[in-house]
Amino acid sequence: MSFRLARIAAVSAMTAILLTGCARFDDSTTSPFEPPPTQALGGEVGPGTPTTTSKAPRPTGPCIDPDEAVVVSCLDTTGGIVVLPDAGSALVTERRTGRILQVTADRKPVEVAKLNVDATGDGGLTDIALSPHYDEDKLIYAYVTTGSDNRIVRLAPGDEPKPILVGIPKGPDGNAGAIDFAPNGDLIVLTGDSGSPAAAADPNSRAGKVLRITDPQTTGASPSSILMSGVGRAGGLCPDPQGNIWVTDRTETEDRLSKVTSDGTVLNSVWTWPDKPGVAGCAAAADAIVVSLEFAKALAVVRVEASTGTVSTAPSIALQQRYGALHGAATGPDGLIWITTANKTSGTPGPFDDRVIRIPPQSPAGGGSD
Image (cartoon, rainbow, N blue to C red; front, side, top):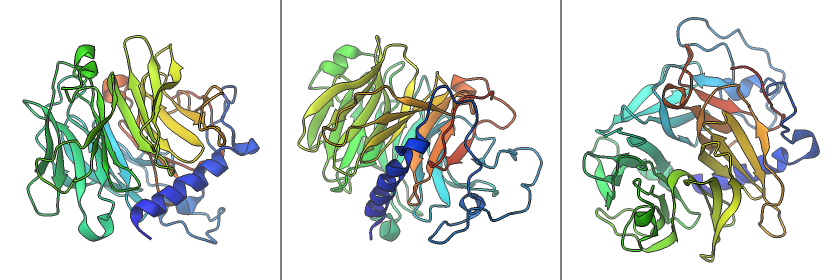
């Protein structure tokens, strides 16, 4: 089974757990997530893995967060995150430094690559994605801001970054973007409006769009189609197992969750947040979308009606105030949710910020002081 298919199966299983009656996240809860299975935090999880196995206490010291859900601490403010096929490690970007780090629980981060980026405003190294055939080709795709534009580059082991899509407009703000692969192998690109709503509405501009690239292996590729226009400040992009593409963005009046269906129909504002909690990264499955909220310092779980594909109930809230400003979101092949923080630019950083956290979906979560 390919990495892409395995991840789709995992996120579908994740949603089935999230939406059971005992696992519904509720604003009124005050306890954090229940302690996760210890094996899930130190190694691979497989059939028959015990959930009560004891382990030695986590080592103490600088940059070792005592919270066992924290995979790694003391990063610079994060950008994108993607879980590797082993389920026990992930690649995370530092938006401002341009570093791509491999992170694993209780180990020092390993620098995989470092890109030259312009981190002005919300730009920099804002997202990464793995090739659908990562097990064989080890290719990584990255969305970066340069001195002249925003662009997508491809990284191969031991080689210089190759530009895949260039010329995405750059502005004083609205430079962040997101990328992911659809189940059919197309590269989907979310671009920010570069600070110009007019550019986002202009069909001749690549700003403020959701683009499809059918030839992501080609250097200097062009978008095959524009799937959606009018995007504000880009948040996250997450295809679901049915081939629908979910998009979060921030406009002048509200934050939004939108959807591009598998047949190309655009459903703007499937859910909106007039209070503008700072929607960021997302992870999608068959019947739920998980959205990181930077300003609200929480995780939103948006239930999708299975029969209609619509959202009719208010999102449930998890991790309120527990880890501060949440930014990236991803799911691993084992169904665990990985999230990142951006407290060094969007919150109040503590001694362990910024962090990568891994959360089991089978327990409810709520507020608590950070």
